[in-house]
Image 1 (cartoon, rainbow, N blue to C red):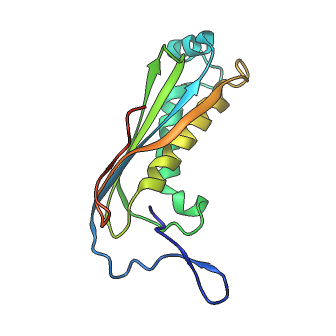
Image 2 (cartoon, rainbow, N blue to C red):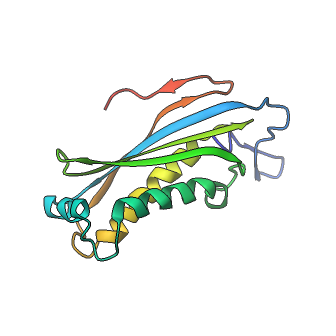
Amino acid sequence: MSGGLTHLDSTGAANMVDVTDKPATTRTARAEGFVVMLPETLALIREGDAKKGDVIGTARLAGIMAAKRTHELIPLCHPLLLSKVRVECEEDAGLPGLRLTAEVRVQGPTGVEMEALTAVSVACLTVYDMVKAVDRGMRIEGIRLLAKDGGRSGAYRADAA
């Protein structure tokens, strides 16, 4: 994870993990989340008729911005110079709703799982904010890490849900 494992010092205070001696490697992470809504709300988003504007475009941008600021939101996360952040949003009529995914990449000494999870979380919250006036019963669900590569712990792939 971006901040890695923390430890308590002799005073009981938490500290950011020292990554000085860790090699810089390419690290990637992918995460997903879902916004479940009424079919009418999904149609409103699809047709571009939300009063606040382009829901999907705004959610993607918000997710990208959030990934870049994860270290400001999550204590003990290292600030990272991200080389890639991509947020995608696809319609899932089976929910009904939207499936949002984020992929984040860095060349560095620590991973980007927290950045991917933050990107998806904020993108989902943005969808909710933009159409909450027409559907307050929306649910944000299933935010999870799908995959990570790089670093000492190697690759991780989530089980199919």
